[in-house]
Image 1: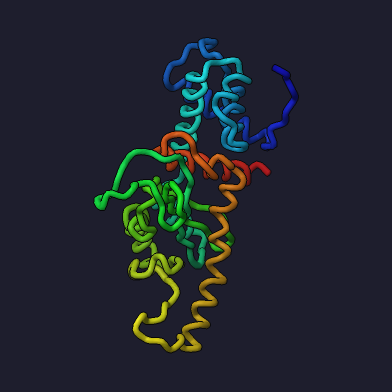
Image 2: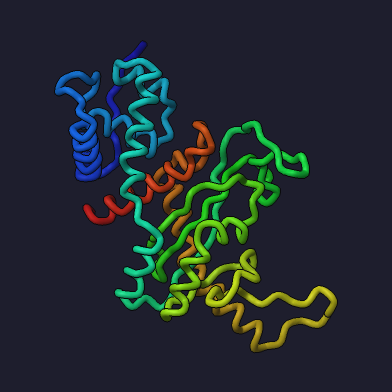
Length: 271
């Protein structure tokens, strides 16, 4: 074994932010002082190394001088503490209306994961995404017009279509927001989502002629405005690289993404 020095490329205020949350959680559950193998700050470093660099839990535990089981327990505790602070969709939309935003952007992203057991009604793998052609979870998110990530949903298996996932987690609240002047922009995968959700027009399958000029212009403008918001998920996955491929239980992806959103907001607030 050869030791080496490494740097965690995360602003120190973000580490301190998580350490304070972990310390408050320990007080809440009545953890006796000095009974843990790691203090809140070192536990925060362990959790953030996993989020930032996708470091294996075995390596994190070895570096911290704890068992692998304790490493997993500390990691999931950190995820849960962060995910509890994730913004609620109704609160996010209310804040958007108060700020006078012109619209929000709805989109879905696939979070790659390892293969797990489970089949659909047709006998296919539940977590296999035909769109991405790999095992993944379907995550819905909302972004502001400037590309800031506002909200992420709980996870759905990769075989679930974007529209179905949105109906489960987002559309009821978005309908209410649209009635109060906050429309939603989405891509063609959400065609038929309902009133207040604007999607590009598609050519009729039985008509060979191209779309009208005005319709093509509408689609081009919609794509240009929506593209800024759709970068939000890419930023989240590039900053918190554990979302590029999750090796823990796929059912935890939603909590992991919500925790990453809280960390992302803390990063921007403390820059």
